[in-house]
Image 1: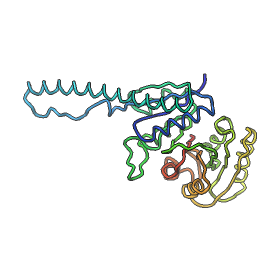
Image 2 (image 1 turned 180 degrees about the horizontal axis):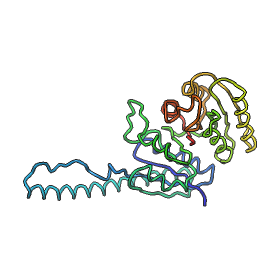
Image 3 (image 1 turned 135 degrees about the vertical axis):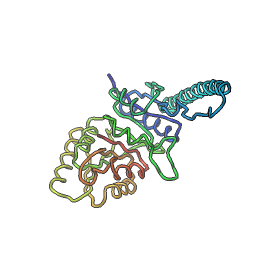
Image 4 (image 1 turned 180 degrees about the vertical axis):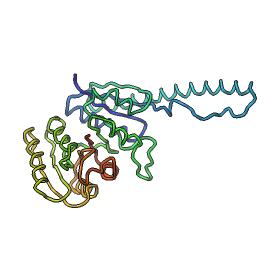
Length: 284
């Protein structure tokens, strides 16, 4: 069975970018797109007790009215969710993708992904959701939860879509970065893209061998990748490299070793995802 591109959409300004990136991946991989909108538990319940200390008869009537309001609210939220999916479908369709399905889910987004990711080749999510604090540059609250839980690559879409021609691979020799290189070698998504594998740190024999192995694996897949070793702190130097040389996408292991181990679970990946203006693909 063909693996799907799972794209999570909500009412945030990132959803349009998620849709465009999903369509871009679909056209390069011939994979269908499934658009999913998850109605969280908070959206489906009202926890505030508005009845207060009211006499019994009035309290009962008020509770009935509140129950009716809750039902209406739930219906409106579902209608809004379907509207979000319809808008998302229209964007992907306009981008030239024909195989599109939509799904409205209820509950926790991580639980929803766990149920469907077996059929996924990649999971797309916006860098920030509707509730993110743009003024403080906060990432979406579900982003790290999804990356921790997912067993498929997680594609974190940037705010705006731009055609991608070059890819920077943050390579530290750890298992997740090796998995990232293997993924690139096996995926038709990266055919004809310029790929550069970069290690941050000293140019030791071990580092040289690791990069040589990564280059050989990619070469066998028809990808003539460049390799590079740079000094400094991973989040600072990798982010600067993306900006200075105009890379269109970053691929990195979500967990690694050495200084890059702090990705996602610490400062480095969080900072890379937060600061980079291009998509970041995270591999476990």
